[in-house]
Length: 92
Image (cartoon, rainbow, N blue to C red; front, side, top):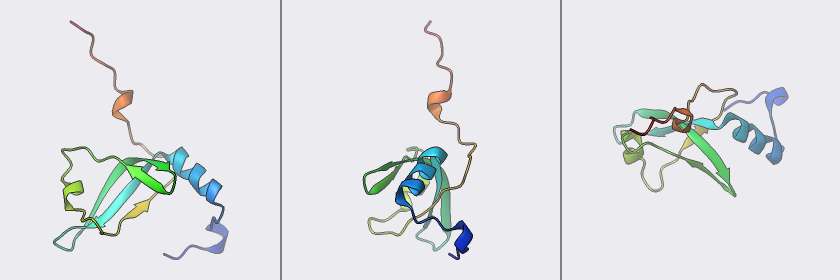
């Protein structure tokens, strides 16, 4: 990927802060059929790993092999709505 010098960020703390502020990333992989798959997921940076969460109903996670490369695309503000933001139904 070509990143113009004025857009390049080399400071790891700044990168981690950007990922934390975004809170979501496009997870891009290649399926067994050779076609790309992409899913917007919530992400958290823990130590040396970025952890993402797929819903069990999303078939994308089943197509990622153990050594498959993964591209995470983190952008600025997202429109991802976490299920934790949903109102809980009142007990009956």
